[in-house]
Amino acid sequence: GAVVSQHPSRVICKSGTSVKIECRSLDFQATTMFWYRQFPKQSLMLMATSNEGSKATYEQGVEKDKFLINHASLTLSTLTVTSAHPEDSSFYICSARDLWQGQETQYFGPGTRLLVL
Amino acid sequence: AQSVSQHNHHVILSEAASLELGCNYSYGGTVNLFWYVQYPGQHLQLLLKYFSGDPLVKGIKGFEAEFIKSKFSFNLRKPSVQWSDTAEYFCAVTYNAGNMLTFGGGTRLMVKP
Image (spheres, rainbow over the protein chains, first blue to last red):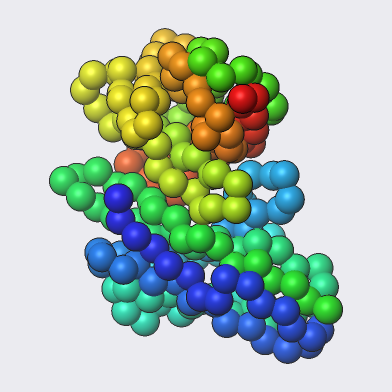
């Protein structure tokens, strides 16, 4: 399957700082990437859809000014958690959409664990 | 609202037992269906997917799933589980050729050696 990477895998930061998380599709181009949060023992919650060359689409309840998304190229999307607070501590997962032979499939990155002190 | 239900939250099996994990989705038009697996400490991996054609889909590691349109179901099966199948399994659906995945709540499978 297609490979998606995320960097960093873990980050600890102080409250009030900003954290940038990168999501890369390594062996395919992705016009669309997705950002999720996964809370302990829960399923994934879609935060936003990242579209290459245009603004991201945010799900209801997700603050676009707090979670800045940039999709500057076909292989890279970034999520910046601005002015992070302890309640932002979570596991953030990205996925990239691969369109192969007319079949759209999302491939997931390994996730980034964020801890805000 | 479109939704996906996985009724089994936790399943415990002994090795060599057969597995069936339920997945039901709400009606919302045409669907594409997926099963993902998340092994402990690892990221989500695609097990199998259904887009069209034969409703019995075979995936990796001996897993298969059957799309039953009349029951809005896409249950995952494996005839004989192994300890290494211990993981969390997620059913997911896209509707009407959209690109947004709707996930089920996940099923944690523990296989006892």
